[in-house]
Amino acid sequence: MRHLLDKIETRQRVVSEAAAQLRQQIALLSEQLDAAEDTLDHLEITQANVLEDLIAGLLSKDGFESVRASIDERQPVRPTWLPVKAGHG
Image (cartoon, rainbow, N blue to C red; front, top):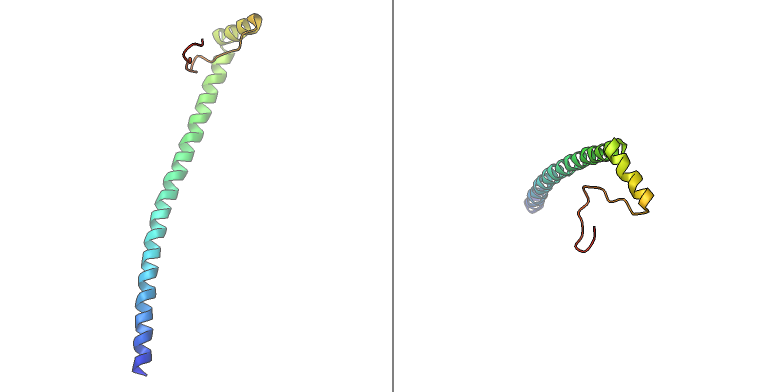
């Protein structure tokens, strides 16, 4: 009977250690998930700000005139924030 109880205690220790390791992994994954969700929130805010600035620029007189001139000249519109590639522009 003692042999059976020793096996049970050994198994309990092994499972307890495995559970502790899993708790640590879950805690780490939770931290990583929180960081990823924060990054997504920041990216959504940044995207909204960029779109607002882009729309505001297009709706401004200078932005509208730039778009209109490009249409009149049949040249594609290149936003001012878009980098010019070598040989273009």
